[in-house]
Each structure stands twice: as structure tokens, then as C-alpha cells.
Amino acid sequence: MTQHPPRSVLLASPRSFCAGVERAIEIVERLLDQRGGPVYVRKQIVHNVHVVRGLEARGAVFVEELSEVPPGATVVFSAHGVSPAVRAEAVERSLDVLDATCPLVAKVHAEARRFADRGDTIVLIGHAGHEEVEGTLGEAPERMVLVETVADVEALEVTGPVSYLTQTTLAVDETAEVVAALERKFPHVRGPGSDDICYATTNRQIAIREVAAQSDLVLVVGSKNSSNSVRMVELAARTGTPAHLVDDASEIDPAWLAGVSAVGLSAGASAPPELVDEVVATLRALGAVSVSTHTTATETISFTLPPAVRGAG
Image (cartoon, rainbow, N blue to C red; front, side, top):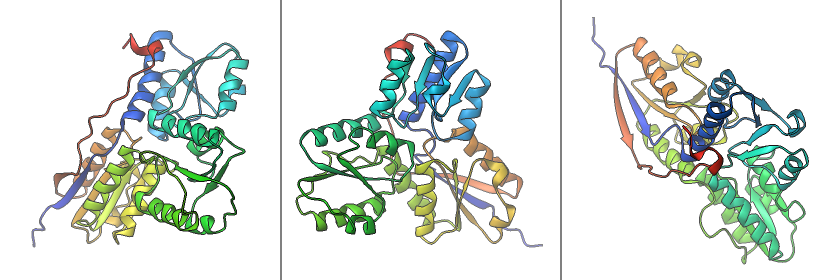
């Protein structure tokens, strides 16, 4: 009987939690430790079903809108940010707000206000309906227009000064094409001082591209509503490697592994790292594997917690 060499698992690094996600989850955890439940959270704190379930089990209550939160209660705004209208509603309802908006999303909001104040029409590159986009659009709804594709840019009819911003979790290569289309159409268009696509999104895309090039199959751990996770799968697929998004190891179809000698593995910025360990264990159960880590960047960024929770934990 022929002895097959072990299947190799190429772990992309960086993967899993980014600094903004770690900060948002820690805010909810510390509030629960300090005050007990219920702690209300508007929308999913981060886009990951396992994170949400874990916090629910500890007393977090996730709501879609502030109208579901009792007056005077504690509410956390998710990492994706909220519009000024939501902030105003929280004040109106006398809610005790802790803001878990990622500082890199808050940067985009500040840019939106600045560009609107100077009288620009702001083109926001992003995905319609995504919570981060809804919050950013709310900063200057009368001055902002959303585009998703090069075709959207070509259809724009705008006069006067134009600037652009982007959602923080987009595909770097696709966004560059949309920005190039904007620059062709509006030669004097102005962008942000530094990239809006966040360091973590960029780093995870570079890492997944590298392992995808050496793999027969790519698995990305993340939830379906996680923009950065979906972009990683799409990017791997664009390199020509079959790629799948899985919430956890239970979603792996053994049929995917037929004839596969190298599996590229990563996780979106909102997926807990232990889920990656479980995928490796499942792959091991399906046959011998050798695991190697492929590091394209080292992340050292961390964000300060709000003063209300800083002293505890």
C-alpha cells in the first residue's frame, strides 16, 4: 500500500482577531464583569456568530435598534460604528453608552465630517447595507454618494469638488480599481491622508494571497456577514485556488479535500483563534497533516479601552 505524504496545512499569519475586534469584545466582557447582565449591544458587536453566542451566554443582549433598549440602560455601540442620528437617539433615551467603534472606523467618520465641511461631494466606496457604511453615510447624508464598482463610478453625475473615502474592510486590489476610475473621471478628486482600508484587512489579504498561491484549497474561518472574511475568500479564488468560508470546523466538507495535498488556512479579523485550531484538528482527523505558519507581517497595534471600563478586568 502506498504511503501518502502528510497533507500540508499552510497557516496564514496574521489571521483572526485584529485590535479593533479585541477592544470591542473586551469592552462587553468588562462591562459584564463589572455590572452583570443585561448589557445591551446594538447590532452584532463584531460579525462573528461564535463571539455573539459566547457573549449572549454571559448576559449580553443583542438588539437591532435602540428602541429595544429600556430607557437608562447600558448599551454598547458595535465595532462598525454608528451614525450621528443613533448617537442622538441614545441621548434622547438617557442610555448609558459605551462606544466600541473601531478607532480606524472613527477615523473615516472624522474624514467624512471634514470633507463635508469644506463643501465636497464625498464618494464612499463600500458595500450597501453594511453597518459600517450605514454609520459613515450618516455623518453627511446630503453630501455623500455610495459606489461599489467601477460601473457605479462611471454613472456618477457630480459637480463641484469631489473627495472619496472607503469602507475599512474592502479588497485592496478591487478598491484600487474603483479609485483609479474616480481619478480618471474626476482628475482633481481628493482622497484621505492615509488609506481607509485598515491595516488588519490589508495584512490578512496579503497573507492569504501568499498561501493561496501554494495551496490546492483555501479555507477561511469567518461568518457570512463578515466583510473582511468574505473578501479573503474572494481574493483566494481570484488566484485560481478553490476557497471556502466556514464558520467553524463542522462546515468542512471532506469532499473538498479529494486530491488536495496543501490546504491554505486563515481566519477573518472577527473570528476567534481557537476556531482555527479546531479546523486543524478536524483536518488531522481526516488524515495526517503537517502544519507550517507563513508570516507576511507582525501586528503590534492595540487600542486603548474607554475610561469607563479601563480600571477593571
